Length: 248
Image 1 (cartoon, one colour):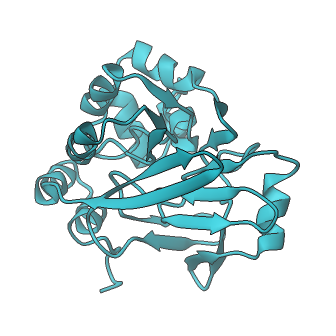
Image 2 (tube, one colour; image 1 turned 120 degrees about the vertical axis):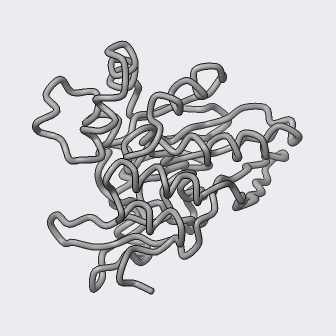
């Protein structure tokens, strides 16, 4: 069985189109989407329309929850933009997504952690950047979860980690947002270091699990120009380079 795993599209329909095109010849059995579908100054409605035609298991991310709210004055700029572009029924669909999903065969999926959509599972902040946390802290965030494979997103960082006597944890990286800054408590950046659209393919063979991490080229300059037109030069820089302004 082969499963395509995507996460953190953030309204980048151009990146999503490229990922879906790369998936087609692979004859995947299913696709799992780990949330944060639309937030960002790009193409949120077009992203939703692309996903609407697919049979995808989708869980809700923290930004999906925020975008689905009724009061945009309480949102950040990226969520406000997506909220304004989406139809009411699209926002309602986002808000109704499950936070956690059992995909069968011992595979569970969620955006961040099993009980918190805005907390890193694998990473911690150190000197303004994300790095892998200790196994003990990762186990604490997983709690008593019984799984063969754990699928998560949120950090936009590729991770493949086999916990001793525990599950395999896979974060495929971000489809559409290769770098971001979080200016809130414990401010930090996440940077992939290149502008490619990322996803993963999970292959189950008996008791074995294989993972292919894939980075796809797409017209990221077009995505960057879209961010520039919508008043977000920070996003434009990240989309062009995979780094936040000032990092390179």
